[in-house]
Length: 90
Image: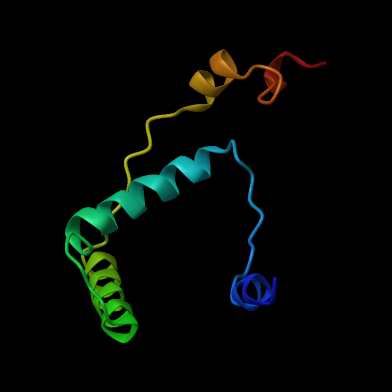
């Protein structure tokens, strides 16, 4: 129990929605990070941070974007109650 508490104190929980279109964009970006930067073993946390910062700077300088294809119409078709059509309301 003492070891579990020690480890738990090192963790920080961030509660986020499980079902959201922004989460898909985050997953895409993390996949790009993994493929372009983290495709090898980096055993030093300081070096890992430097590598990620350098990757992020390059990605921002190149003004990279995600081409998001999930439109409002597609959202309404898939999850109608969550995306009501306001133009039909009186």
